[in-house]
Length: 189
Image (tube, rainbow, N blue to C red; front, side):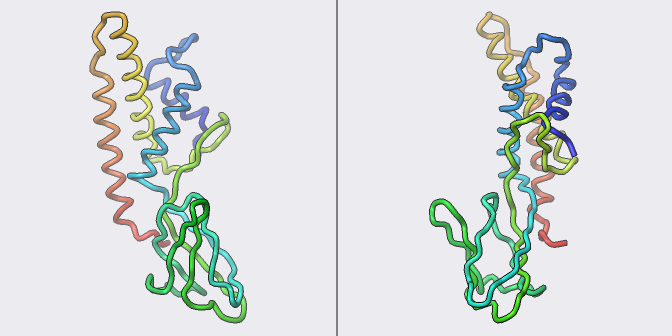
């Protein structure tokens, strides 16, 4: 898996920004990497699941904060009809509400959902995205870097160049390619 520091190095390599002092600060690149992860979560959300033991008489189970959309719920290995559960949001937390009591005895509740990518802060933080999506993220950051650079050039009376538009096109192509794949997935192993 790739760390924040490694991903930033990939971006610098793509931009040809390998000589200190760098054209873009670590903070700028980190900010754009996190923006890119947020954008990718909308179009290519990570597929996640969690497993929890049920308790007889308990119908409400907390969902992870990173859950955008619950796709499937299994109880004791059986897929529950979507009419037998719902998701409630109270402004701060999401809860999976089973309409039927899970019954006596311990049973496993497995929830498959589309999530968000974690924000990256430290150079050792690990990106939790598929390797196939990484080129799209690199293109997103390069696009943002070139837009920033174009703004700096325009302030000096020099044209902005075409690199930003080229990176944006590559990013949108990558996002669309992987987004279609993710939407057609059924989220189950």
